Image 1 (tube, each protein chain N blue to C red):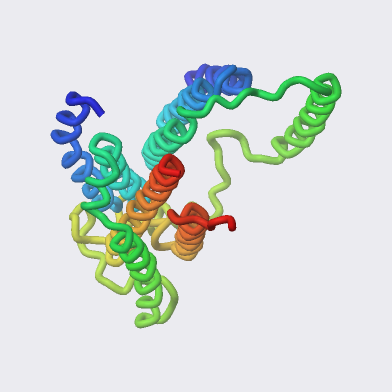
Image 2 (cartoon, rainbow over the protein chains, first blue to last red; image 1 turned 90 degrees about the vertical axis):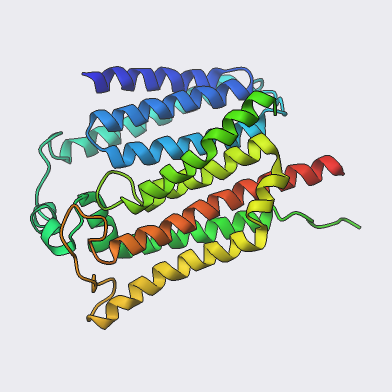
Length: 172
Length: 141
C-alpha cells in the first residue's frame, strides 16, 4: 500500500519535473523523485539498494545544481506541438501494450522462482563467511559481473577527465 | 561560503569520512559495501571543496595522487581476481572464511570491498574536480 502511494508521488514528481519552467526546479523535483525511490527500496526490504540510491542521488544533485544554477536555459516548446503530442501518445500506447504482454509472463510479486537463488541462500554463509548475502553474491558468486562494472566505471571516469581536461584545445 | 557553513563543515567532515570508511569495512556484515561507502568518502571531499574552495581540497588530494589511487584500486581488484588462480579458478575465495559476524572474516570479500571503495571514492571525486576546474578556466577566459 505504501509503495503505491510512493509510486503515485513519483509519477506526479516526474511530470512536474518535465513541465517546470526553469532548470533548477526540475533538478530539485528530480531529487524528490529519487528520494521517493530510495524510500520504496527501504519498504521493499532492500537496504543495500536504498543506501546506494541515497548517496548517488546526493552526489548527482550536487553536481547538477552546480552545473545548472548559473544557466537559465529557456525551454523550446513552440513549433509542431500537435504532431509531437500525437506521436508521443501513440508511442506510449504501443509501449504499454508490449509491457502488458511482458508482465503477464513474470512470476507473481512476492513469490519468486527459487531456481538459482535457493543455492545461494543455503550455502552463502558457510561458503563465503559473509553475513550480508548481497555482498556474498556480488563479490563472491557473481564477482565477474562486478569486475565488468568496475571496468565500466573506470572507463567512464577516464572519458570524463579526458573530455574535461583543464587546458583544453586552443583554436588558432 | 559563509562562516556558518565553514564551521559546521570543519566539525562534520571527519565524521562523514569515518562513516564512509566504516561502510566500506563492514560491507560483508551490514548493508552497504564498496560502492556506497566509496561514494560517501567522495562526498566528504566534495563537502570540503564546496565549503573551502577548490584550492584546499586539491591540497589534500592532488590530481596525480587521485589518478594514481584510482588505478591502484582497479589493479588491486584485478589482482584479487587473479589470486583465485592459486586455488584453481578465477575469483576463488582462497583465504580462510573465518567465523561469521567478525570483522576479519569472509576471506577476499573485505579486500575487494576496500579496493572498490578506493576506486569509486577517488574516481567520483576526480569527476567533480574536473567539472570545477573546467568552470574555473571558463571563468578566467
